Image (cartoon, rainbow, N blue to C red; front, top):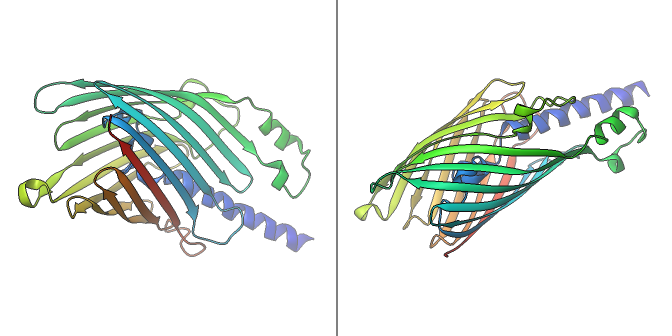
Length: 295
């Protein structure tokens, strides 16, 4: 019995570490494929309807490893944008689901395609322990206290500046943690996100290919801040995309995608584990799909 308890203890520690990895590294789609994920100000940036779906799973056979599903839809018309964002993540016994509605405003500054963007998301966040998967006392008072918490009102706020080539943006996710201190303190919650990128076109009249370097800086509650640096190369009339990012947590992200006529996109990204965990488990694979319908 003692040996069995020790094994369970270390499995729990490993799964907790994997959950932390999932939080320290958000969906990689937010860097290029779907920037609305990281900043509500980017909702409705493209005119028409844009639908994005993402699935992420740890490349490991260990039971309880994190899985994430995300679906967004945003619509841009003139200066206004609206969107909806649905998110579900499960790691071990922990499940987190949220649904947010977004409003954004895009203010032109000059004829040089300069714009200021503002966005806010408001919705509901639910965090629970899946008692049906619990091997033990499902009536444990600690589990009951955790699951008795109410569904939270949550939201995100973001700003951005863009011109024809340059993008500077910042956002504050999980506003609940800013305005209301929860009794149950989670240490792996995102606290801020900032990023800057510059688009470099090349080829015939800059229509054949482009390179977009990007740097990002993120805050995570209970951890050191994380910076990311990388670039995306688009070629073959910008329909083939290669992505590479390095994270100072000791991991890297690599991806390839196809954006057919700027309407249908499919991409796959693989993020290696952090340097502390790469001896124990593999990284995570992420699949992204996007459909863009002109207005």
